[in-house]
Image (cartoon, rainbow, N blue to C red; front, side, top):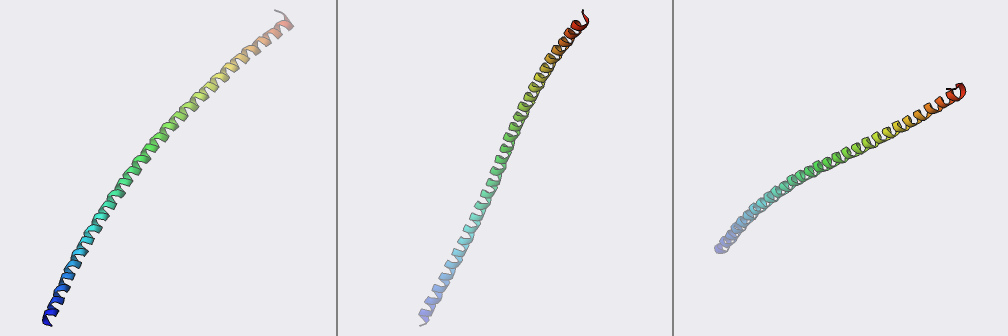
Length: 106
């Protein structure tokens, strides 16, 4: 009977050692996974930040291009309006001169 109790005690001690080893392995596994997760989070933050910066640069370039195009279009429109104004002005002056000449003579 004593021998059986010693075997049971030995088995219980062995089970306790295995349990402690498994708990330690589980804690190490959990720590490793937490570290990997943290590294992935940091990488995702960096990747997101880089992509956001790149998108901001692209949008800034597009905005500059749009502003340049609008400025060019506005300058072209102003130039055409000025040319049109000058043409109408000269035409109107000629008509006035012709009317004055026809009414009052040369």
